[in-house]
Amino acid sequence: MKICLLTDGIAPYVTGGMQRHSFNLCNELLKLEHEVTLVHCVYGKSSLPKKEEVNELFENSKHLILHTLRFPESNGMPGHYIKESYQYSLAITSLLKDKFPQFDLIYVKGFSGWDLLQQRKKGIIKTGPILVNFHGLEMFQEPASFRERLKAYLLKSPTKWNLNQADYCISYGGKITSLLNGIGIPQSKVLVIPGAVSDNTLLEKRNLPVNSKFLFVGRYERRKGIEELMQVVASMPELEISFVGAIPSSKKLNRANVRYYGEVKDVNALNEIFDEHTFLIAPSHSEGMPNVILEAMSRGLIPLATRVGAVEELVDNSNGFLFEPKSVEAIRVNIEAAKLLGIEAVLERSSKSINKIRANSTWSQIISQTIENFQRVVEKP
Image (cartoon, rainbow, N blue to C red; front, side, top):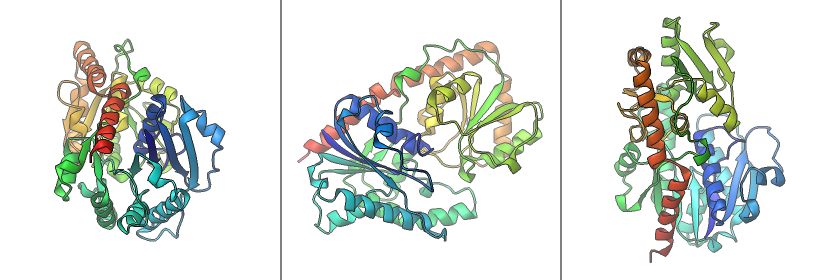
């Protein structure tokens, strides 16, 4: 197939679960020798990577047609991200306007196809099926603060418009499908395609140290629940915990048993960090199907996570701990419960984490499911 993949960035140039998913999806499509036209971007003053540099990241770039853009920047006023996203979509349409009719399907991340959908609605551009993926639909989940509530309010209307104009909407399953249905997307337009991890990161079993070390991986962002987690860490001086991500210096605790790795973009380096820990703590207020939980489980970590998004598709009481978001007490209680697990219980839950990924969540499985969905919508009269 000839597939156009419109993204708001790919790893390692942009950090985030959406961007990691975009890279992996493109890589898997190329490995199967589908022709992929990829549009990605960089932010801020980062230099545009050379085409040869990006090509080297993929395992089979001979079928890749690459376009690299710079994401627009505006004045930072409320709603600036919506304005910038629309401008970015305009740049994409201008770039590929004559090419869009040639693709078998167009897979859109976030708002990157906004103008294309407008042009198609007006009859100016004709296309094959357009699939839109807003990942966690966080703007329709419970916000973490007044500021987040305002941000969500501004995002809801354009997000809903883009989803309604799409031929199909991608869901990770679980509560994400319910959110789509709740905002008026019929089930016939929903394609459930879960997240995945690379097969080569999956351990056969955890032949690694068993300890009571906890790990948080993510951005310092309100919806990630890190403020509640920091309150727990401050109240538990004996807790061994590490943070991967750009944590502001003012928020760091100066304790020997609290470690800060900073931002880690290299997958192998991140796997090494996973292997030094036993538990992953993911106390988010809203999520899709977090890559970090998938990746940690593939290394045998035991997840402690909130009941949001599609998290319950991955985590249950057999392999981890689930609790409600926004609760400092729930985080503390579940950390205490995890610390009390004996070695046999730790190894059992660790094994179940690995087996869950092996059974349902490797890219070799999910890409087959993805292609089946693609072929079905392309062949549909």
